[in-house]
Amino acid sequence: MNQIQHHNPNTDALTEVDESIQLPRSWNRTAVLAAMFCIPFFCPPMTLLGVGAGAIALRSLRKNPDTKGAWLAWTSISFGMVATIVGAWLFWVSGLRTIVLGPTVALAPLFSNDPQSMKQEWAGPATALTQEQLAAFTAQVDSRYGKFVSARFSDQRPTPLEQSWKRTMVVIPITIQFASGSCEADLGLERFNEKTGKSTMVWRSLRIVDGVRGDLLFPDGEPAPPELPAFEIAKPATTIKPVPTTSAAPTPQQP
Image 1: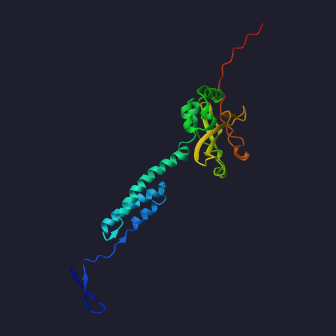
Image 2: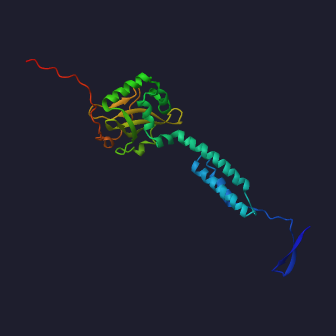
């Protein structure tokens, strides 16, 4: 048995200590913190912090071998990376994609007469329309405003926040850019399925606001987007220029 002598200052006596006896090692605090960050399993910001804390913990463990927690740090890094990827993908498909990419993604397949692409962005009667039925609506829009260019969230009519969390269907005010100019419109967004309670984040309806020639609603068989408060949609800015149309030449008058 290997022993060493240890001086006791209280008794001025030498005592022998067994070297083979190892004191219990304490946990590395950073490794424990990394595991705590990963407790919210699919919350990407937290799990990403868990990955970073786990890497810091491994570095700290190399400098302080008297602490333990290497397996906890490695588990936090591995689990945190997987959870971050999976969680980010779930957030993306459940609504973040709609917010980031904007309304152009919803309207592009509509105005390009692409029923297959519409099924990825829309729900309800809009997904049952044929290419000919889509073409009939876009032809009506083209005759008024010209070709579709792009769309963005309206900076003139902000979305009321109080209606976003209380209704299954919410209205998103947008500005559509056509070849002849821009006009205001409303998109009906289904946040979740009322029967199942699952998040859907799909488009259901469209209203092109036109105080001169009347609003255009899409599609048939789907209720129009919810009405915004009157003060929100009063006198929407419309900068549409008339689309030139061909007319017959005037007949000469008889003398």
